Length: 203
Image 1: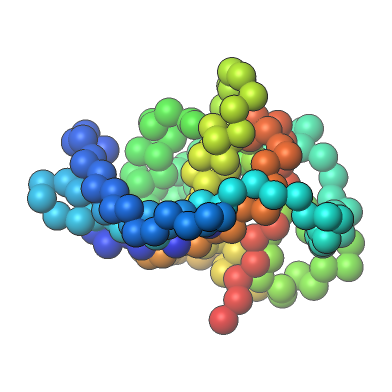
Image 2: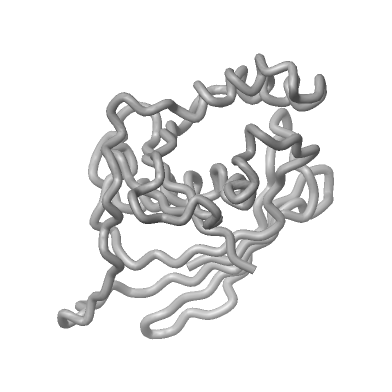
């Protein structure tokens, strides 16, 4: 698991210096504290916990897979961003932000999924098929875990707008992550295959 906190805006044109502190090394668990710095200031910090693999003895539980349609033929997030960048209803500042986002390399692809039948349209939840761009070489589970962690912070905020007509019907001035936590329960997946993300806003 990890628990991260975004403290200051980073500069993509500058290197990041990572300071890792060995907090604890136990028989089954190891804990690390991480600080990411630019220009001598901490821009991100996290606590990361590692667990030695062990059999579950069949005590695995999981929610049922939602009855959603597959990713083929659905709009990608870049398609939606392009529509928003071209939409005169948005401020010039936000349209320029969307254009700058589209100009950056696409490291992952998301496709928005229509709500399954029976889901309340006012419920703040969204569904996305997501995968990294291209094909990952080898079968190293660590790489797929890293990519999953990266993708897990993509588009986490837009579901809050779902009860109000969706984010494209609003005019947000800023969307940023302040903190982010994640628990990894399995390594039985590939980040370059389509994965279904269900994102829910709670208070």
